[in-house]
Length: 86
Image 1 (cartoon, helix red, strand yellow):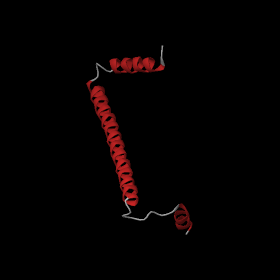
Image 2 (cartoon, rainbow, N blue to C red):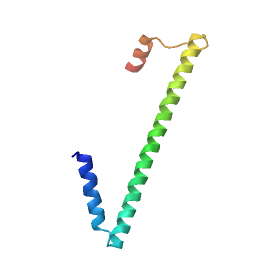
Image 3 (cartoon, rainbow, N blue to C red):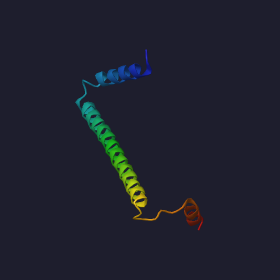
Image 4 (cartoon, rainbow, N blue to C red):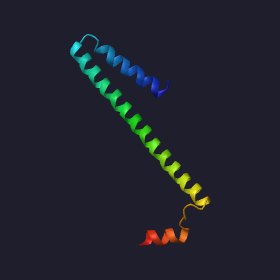
């Protein structure tokens, strides 16, 4: 039996043991809602981070395109290294 299934069974047994206790069930429900909320926040944060990365890539590609068209001058690798040393 996999560890995931064992964990699920253990959780279900623990919940079943609380079915007679309304106060415990209310606390459990509140806790589960908090867990769901945290999970949603993490997913949203992750989506926002992904969008920010995609925007940075788009900006970089626009700069490369502008450089190829001669609209802007790109730094050479040597210029970049000199800049970060200082």
